[in-house]
Length: 238
Image (tube, rainbow, N blue to C red; front, side):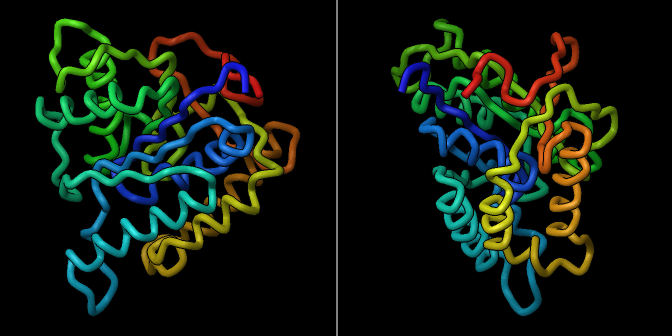
């Protein structure tokens, strides 16, 4: 395939970016592009009844791999602890090293404003890791510099302060597989606190209405970047 890209979705917890942009991920995987989900933590603190935090961590990593498989992607989960994420040099260097190793062109991550501290830190980590991976003056395991081409934010119910979509991606043909992938997560299907599955199914419908299509997912440019309304990732048409 000409102009093949590597799309990486970076989330604070297993399940975040699959909900936010899993159908977009599947759209690009179906077209032959490489797609990777990078989870900074497993999101293990919201444990189901009668299970330990460590057991739930293992379960969520397994669920992430199953969801990624459905979407035609790979899944990587780092060892950082849920609700304890830090935008420190060690974390930034770890993500920058992954950028140099795997060479993603486009990254989709959380919006910068969130009620969840891990979510709010995630785009800051991505931006600083992008800079560190790109600058030749930083030595990272002997790997050559690598720069992203684009970074986008995606839509999460906890990250809505100031989130106004710039891009509506038509995911009508991908939505059934997207919902199948979401069903791999226990918390999405069984949470007593929030109806995740219903919300994201309805959100896809509502965004599809705005995009004049059946289902859509949205992206937002980083603050200060140019905006554009379209039905694919700008600059990476299928």
